[in-house]
Length: 441
Image (cartoon, rainbow, N blue to C red):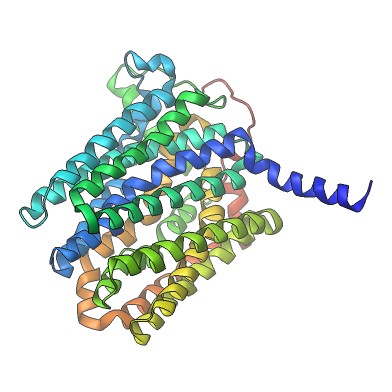
């Protein structure tokens, strides 16, 4: 065999896992998962800031994200309630369609409100988008985990993050560009189409092979078992409380910093076009590069060491925004800070999401991943909504971002201790070990 032939085979072997059916599906699922977050996140922050809403009110809107952190309360419905009529399409597919329609309706509703007329109505509309988006996330995450085989978790997580970023960036960029030309109402209406990729993916691929059909729940005791069962199974594992503590702590600093970037850019005098180019555009390509490197690190270093490295990088990335705030308005400074932050987040998006996916038991995929993903950002979102605006006004942006850097350290130390104690391997569920569906317990 010639060197050229060997080189071509190695290249094809490296690319092949990314073009398999399940990882490609994970990409399109991620597109639809990312856009509701963009509509109520940075995009809404920019809209409110440009409408003259004060910082405390703007950061308080991030409390709408707390809906995502409560999704585990109704995730059992997605796992165990069979929908009438369209339920024949399958548990996951039918819920994909219903949740997708709910997201479209909620985004259209947000498009029609005017923050300058009624801030309360805007808040209610944002919460509705959060509820619909969280429900969509529940079924999207469950569908993704169940279509991916254990060997595909790393690649599938990366493809999902590619999709999530493209969906959120495309929707956010489109909203910014259209808002400057036709207004925010039209911008939001146009972005509603981003709900469609996941719905079409479900229709084309059908029900996941690894999905376990739910047991029918008739009485209150059985309904309670649907809610408590996933939690009980998780907490029976060795070191479960430390794992949960890590999930709660690891992203506090990163979440607190990320949800305030647009306030920083607005106060520094960046225009919508500059934000679209240097924040959205540069961040997009840096994130994609981070996901690519994250996949390599996950394959070469393994789950534990790659997660630890990503946590360190995400901690350092917060410091770059303290430097930007001290430097003052600079397009290259903004591009550098955003680039590094998104590169680190891209690596973490592969490694940490793969670990969290591996924690799930296939009997309770929707419920357990909803709990894990909700817990991962609840503390940071709560702090952003209740204290971020006040902290920024009191201490300034430089000290605020130094504070977020320090908040990332405990999660790094805890994960390192968990590695030393062997709790990472002990904590994974059947999503990381089983390749075929088994009868429901």
